[in-house]
Structure formats: C-alpha cells, structure tokens
Picture 1 (tube, rainbow, N blue to C red):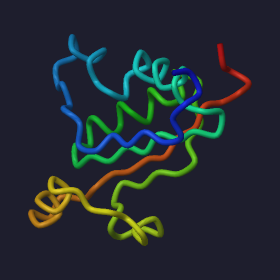
Picture 2 (cartoon, rainbow, N blue to C red):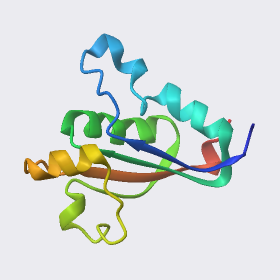
Picture 3 (cartoon, one colour):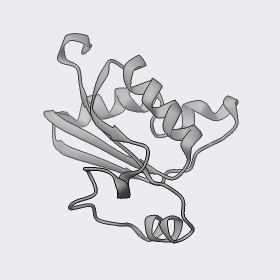
Picture 4 (cartoon, one colour):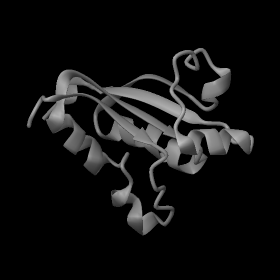
Length: 114
C-alpha cells in the first residue's frame, strides 16, 4: 500500500546495459516514481552495485526523479559507510575479485513530490 514501506534495498540489480533498456533499470526515474508511492515519508532507498556505469546512471536519476542523496560512495568497503554493512553473496563474490562496491542512500524531496 501507499506509504507502507520504510526501506527498499536494491542489491546488485541487473544493469540492463543497452540504452534502449534504461527504463528497466531499477534506479530509473520510472522506478523512483514507484518507490515514491510505496515508501513512508521518511523512507529510504539503499542501492549497491559493482557496476560503475549503472551507478553513475543511478546518481543522475536520483536528481531527475526529484529525490535527494543522503550519502554515496564509489568504494563502500573503504569508506565511512562500511561499518554495519551486511554483505550479500554477490557482494562477497565481487569484493573477492577486487571490484569496488558503489552504494547510495536516497530519500524523496518533499518539495518536488507529485
């Protein structure tokens, strides 16, 4: 229902690398609009990926969708946000390969809602 969810975790989503598939990315402006409906007013979206092009796209889409960044990092495990991080299976695998993990936390901008 509307305003029911406190947090949405997007962990290592399919990057849909082709431009024509951008709307399928879980961090596209279309998906931010969906999250806006189901998140409570204080809700947050937490997104992690090892795919830098997807992460750069996601940072742009946060602003386009009228959301605000709480924080972000291009290397989670070497940042101030590493403490308390729960690693997923994919995160463990990518980290073992030496891939930096990107992470962002965003909330909706009440001034731009609707």
